[in-house]
Amino acid sequence: MRGKQRILGLVVALLALQLGSLISPAYACGCGAMIPDRASRIGVQRETSVVHWDARSRTERIVMRFSVRGTAREAAWIMPVPGRADVELGDPYLFEELRELTAPEHRTRHYFWPRSGDWPFGGGGDSAAAPAPGAAPDAAAPPVGVVGRERLGDFDVARLTATDPDALRDWLDDNGFELPERLSGELRPYVEQKWEYVAVRLAPEERGAALYGTLDPLRITFTSERPVYPMRLSRLAATPQSLGLYVLSEHRMEPRGTIGGNAPEVTYAGEIAAEGAVGELTGRGSGDGNGGGGREGDGDRGARLFLTALEQEFPEPGRIDGDHELRAARADTPYRQVVLHDRLLTIGGEVPVWLVTAVGVPAAASALLWGLRRRRAVRSAA
Image 1 (cartoon, rainbow, N blue to C red):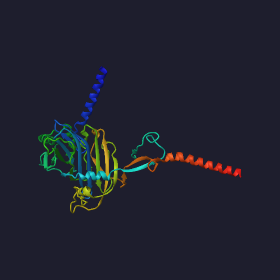
Image 2 (cartoon, rainbow, N blue to C red):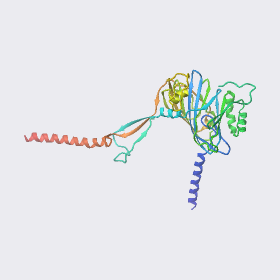
Image 3 (cartoon, one colour):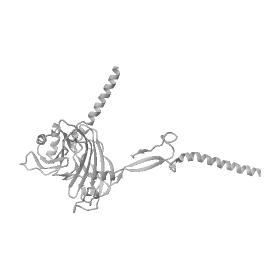
């Protein structure tokens, strides 16, 4: 009886642990800090971002989309940026376009002899494998200055300057959210570099609705001396972080380092046409009518861009030691993932070639041997 109670207690404990992991707070995401109110919980399941870097104008655009889960009805998100930022809603079709453009190529590879799962060793089936810094604020400005504030869908966006991370924490407190004490210290390097901040209150327009699922993307535009993707605040995350990054530029791009995570993995690299939502983002396309209308007089229409898709895992967020600085790779080498589907070589899609060979070759050999013997017998009789 005691043994059964212990097993039941263990099962309950495991279930509680799994439930807790599903709704555990995430005080950081790949780009900044996600701060729920004290009574709620929120977790960032996945962060996918698009970075467009225009080297000629030193302009960077970041479009970010979050998939979240939890019980929070309001939350705040902070992102440091090296220059004065403009914020607007992004085009959700952008991510669908990029997902289709970077999808792996599927190839079929045939094999001759049957494997496990093939007849006569088992049922049929296929297996798949894959081969492997901003303007300084005025001296008379307050510790926290509000450059602008606007409502964008479910987002209440404030563009801020700050000369004191503690004052920034107080500003958030005054607006109904608490900033973790440790985050104040993590903001200090940005204050010293005179960066600015985009503070976002995630508050659904539907009263009482919880933040759950895929949120509308946000587009942030700013000037910078070099392409950068802010990551330092993610070191405060309580759970492993996953980042998917699309980089649009004139050349193939790569991070300068791992900044405390696993080595970034390139999942796609190649030239693409600046059309649709991609053209709208970069100012080089005419749009396709699916939510990506081009902007007149903005760049070269129909131009081609180099797209680099990166994936990176951060098993121990506390080891993150900086922001991602992006640079042009040594060469614009194209790359596309290939998924190989192994299939048994057949005739007419049904009869295995090995079976035909195994039966046909001995039969043909026997017939040939019989014929030779027959010929010899006829000659002997003559």
